[in-house]
Amino acid sequence: MTHETQIEALLEAFRSSPRFILTSHARPDGDALGSVLALAEILDQLGRQTDVVFADPIPLIYQTLPNIQRIHHKPSAVDIADHSIPAILLECDGIARTGLLGLEDRLLINIDHHASGRNFASINWIDEQACAVGAMVYRIALAAKVEITPSMATCLYTSILSDTGAFTYSCTSADTFSVVHDLALHGASPSQIARDIYFSNPASKIRLLGAALSNLQCDGKVAWAWVTSKDMERTGADAEDCEGVVNHLISIAGVESAVFLRELPDVNEFRLSIRSKGKIDVARVAESFGGGGHRSASGCTVGGPLDVATERVLTQLRDGLC
Image (tube, rainbow, N blue to C red):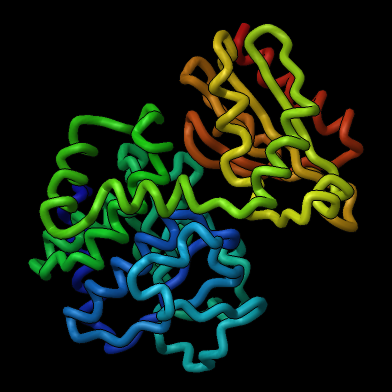
């Protein structure tokens, strides 16, 4: 089935119901938030009502996104009991990835670009070549012939900028720049969006970065660092402050793969962010631990203690780089 055919199937589904639940994964990032808000605008223009729901709070750096107030924070469950209302899930490999209850037993629509994406829904569009789900939503907007408003353009540009690592990941292509060029023409401000994402960090994030870098270890082509729950408490940091720490590790000359480990509170587990410069597919590494993502950027959770979790992932990274 071609992408055009899949998009038409999506548009047909959008026309089939007056109301939708719209969500993405827990611990939302720029692609999750930007693509959901943009798709909500598309559905508005198609005359549909949307209930935008996320399990986790909005990170500080994305709170300036247009229409961010549309997102309802529901820590446990969607409070819409009418199961005739379909749910659209962006960037998820299943319902569990949303962190929400109450999405079961209803029509599901799945839009994703991860290599670990699965056809779990009634309608699925997975494009591993897309640089971001935001780029897929842009194609939906064009096919639907809706107006790309400045607010929609800003959300989609944010989505693409964040999910390409500021245009540094291997998913970045000439088409990526064609899309963001058009978004800038439609009102997205590249400089302002970059400032909002990269120059609006709380002090706690910088303190946490210092704690992580103090634990930095390098061994040949692999680098790693970690923070404990005590580090999190001491620096006043929370989970969103860990976003991007691993990018400092992969920036080291000669390093081909890097991993950042964050100890989870009250459980003997670590949340891992794994990066690659392209020589190793870290999505496969993450998938072996029940996670997933992209070839160059993935994540997973691994049981502790720290030395065991570290050695398990480093063994796979080293084997992959041999």
